[in-house]
Image (cartoon, rainbow, N blue to C red; front, side, top):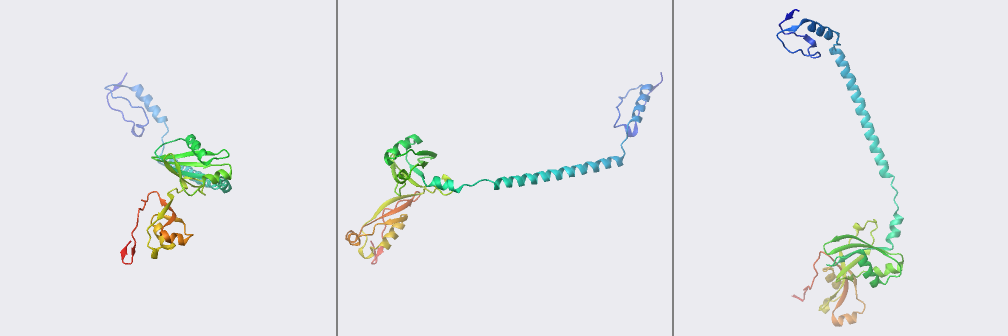
Length: 259
């Protein structure tokens, strides 16, 4: 058998054929068989590879356009879903006509059953009613009340705060939006008395001005002016905001001096 001792190179086919390890002696029959196999392999020209590349680019463009169309279709479907929701304002109105939202200021933390038991005795309700505790925030509780008759609703709805477990509870009508979070519940109505008013400056306008320094004036008792002038004292209902300090007194400048 004839042996050769040199390194063989397969030219342009060296990337597609098997690599023959170097050896000092190579069998000639094995080399001839290897050359025959490489000659039978299909060689891809540059033109064919470019055509394949163009076809692949065309497919990618078609696929990307199809994906864009699907995304647009999905966005349009979502817009149609957002526009097709059924809104019933009448249900919110009917529910709000017999419902209240409350804010309890108390150091004692209590559950819905305890609140219902205490308030049922205070309001002396006639029919069944429901209560829901929405949020606890330190010494503040937000609660919702729903009644089945107007009599019970009228007993609970009041401008003045309720005394509740050594604290206070204020209530207001259910928000028109239907969401309890939209309720303000930021002011506490209370009766205040203005005393020692100078008689020359004692009139309803000045009394309201003094009350406006303490909060929003809701009502002024100014019916019997003769009786009021005898004491120069007036009472008014003022809604004071929760984050506003209570005004104890106010000096007014009158006749060149503070009184």
